[in-house]
Length: 353
Length: 237
Ligand SMILES: Nc1ncnc2c1ncn2[C@@H]1O[C@H](COP(=O)(O)OP(=O)(O)OP(=O)(O)O)[C@@H](O)[C@H]1O
Ligand SMILES: [Mg+2]
Image 1: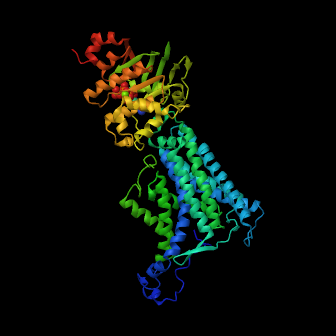
Image 2: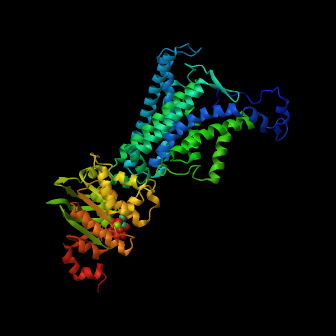
């Protein structure tokens, strides 16, 4: 998941400060694949932090979908990565449909820009939400009605993920859609010498806002209470008059809506991100984030997402760009070794306000 | 007037038939008890009535309407509420939230506070623990919560599956007193119990279930006096 747009300077660029080189600890000779670029880590710390938070926000929003579905069905919905990428395509096609083309970023008035972005948000959210609901209806509900074992659900999830990917491949081919940008990243203010861009601000603030809306919905509303009840004890929930099927549908819908929003932010950050396989790695990392924070736990998803975004960036500076994805999964393994249920550990049921 | 009627009801778990050809009726205003040994099929019968276990044959009518195929959550809306075996407390919800779940199906939610006060009057202990997580309550407290929660639905028919299970002797007395009180206030009760002595002395009528079939029925008093019942369920030789 490279991000040519983001403010992530290359840690290997020669630094004028001589301490950079002298304090870099090399594991072996210069041709070693791994080196501990401590100075790079320090130099880039704040830039990495800011960028990590915006990338982490996207992970967190997608992670919420994994966590919600897991909480209610104890199912890892591997096809959620495609629910996400369908939102990215919806964003791209909305931009395209509005008359924008790959190439230079257009000059738009602020209200125009906001209007277009909201339109793209609406499209992404609807497409991802609908994809999630249809997926549930077509792939999982028939299995539930037959009382299929857990493993069958898991295999179906993986299969559904491929089917959704291949549908895009057949339709749009293997190349990513060319970047269409509505908003150029521009610094708004500086913190610790790091320029905070408009895009970063939008992504982080909107993600946190969406998280709080989702969290409030689950913990404070009647429907949310139904979701928690099904997560904790499905049979008893039914005895309380909760319609389990509706709760399940709603859970997929919420996860889909959040993934759609994440897709728009992703496309603002990485405009060439709409590719048929584009959901795979991001989905895997969002799932990692959910497990990291404690799967089934909404706050865990937020924490895990942000943490993963940060650690990846720090790790990239320290070890080099090619280690970025390795860092994510090593972090997962290490955390699970010490806290097998994730950092916050509780299930969706037990998460409380 | 008959509130609930089961006729010819059989329930299977896979190939195994757990209850067979049951005929049970509960009249409005009654306490009816279902007694029987472990594995006789009492809980299965309760699950069939509340709809979380489908029946394989026979029919269930409630207030004169066939509910055999009605979804379980809609039966709650009709007025059937159950405190299940094992209590079914939501561990990650507070006492208040659990009680609120009991009222989940209710359309009118105006008198919720009054209902909750009523539950707290019946079980003052719950009032003290209102903010505590369900999962951290003691077994007896959970049992109170399960009954109180079922009452929050303002049921016409209250199904209680072994409400005295795991309770201290002096508290068993109290639970049965409360059940009688709930009944006096107008709620019909179908009660499954191991504690046959208490159940039969509180109940208007009773059914005896043995390995999935009804073998005896009568008023509570009649069965209390029945020699074979005395021997099998009351521990009197
Ligand atoms: N989920 C299940 N799968 C298979 N068999 C079951 C299941 N639940 C119950 N049974 C069987 O059905 C029969 C009746 O069980 P049920 O729980 O209704 O008994 P019970 O009368 O409530 O007993 P107890 O007094 O011990 O609670 C038992 O033989 C039991 O083993
Ligand atoms: Mg039982």
